[in-house]
Image 1 (cartoon, rainbow, N blue to C red):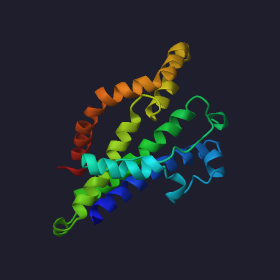
Image 2: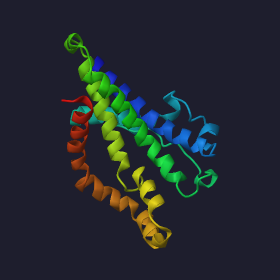
Image 3: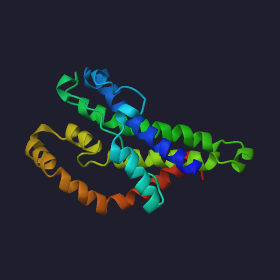
Length: 201
């Protein structure tokens, strides 16, 4: 039971760090929205979403054997960004980047963990931290709305593709469900590959 509780806490703080990173990048680029709303904090309570932060992690574990969830998105106003062209891409990428940093830090600790600690729960818990953060990073980098990756795509598409950008945003929800059923199953093998690269097993 303690291991399950730890995993829920890991998911919670991983998504909170993800969202705070969005807000910090937006603030750095000139948008005070998240700061004014008190969302630039690692205190999880302002970020909690009843379904995504509490019910979903519990249900995913009970019925799927894994723990997954999300926090309330940190709001930001792109009109305040000093970098109007690439600002949204920087804000979008900052969340997955924070998860990648966490995965690399804990992955390297796991890689060089002293052998006597393998008799404890530490390897299992650190493995989960690496897996969940790699999963969050890769999932959110997928270029479909409302995921972070679509801001990268829209920012780097030339202006002459304006109509395509408009259609892309208009049918984003449909693309998201197509992604869930077709592309999402490919994420786990990619997570496993990156895990091996970082941890070395």
